[in-house]
Image (cartoon, rainbow, N blue to C red):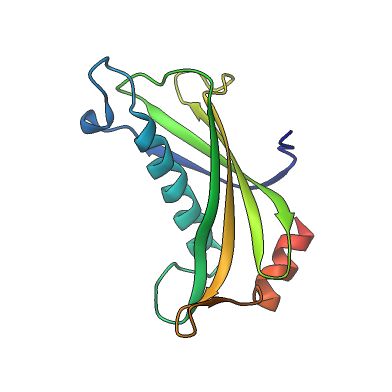
Length: 137
């Protein structure tokens, strides 16, 4: 069971015509792009812009539960919550709603972020400043 209690961030993302499938629904692949965009915005907002120079987040595991189809056109609201934290990783939980139906949950997801040393190609400890931020949420 996912616990959506420790809110980190919310991002509003416009759907694009090309996000649709043949049935006029947003394709399930686009949901992962929306969640990725929200995480990238969140990282930048807390001083950790995503780049591949030294250390940063990589995705180790994802789970996604599709509850309702999102129709085009729309604005997706991706809410990000903190899940579990370990020495080298933490989980971000996502809920997707829409501007047209803000009270409806369309998707729930779980994404494990591993802090990664790009030079050594190994997981590394979450930076102290980031860990302090996460534990204060």
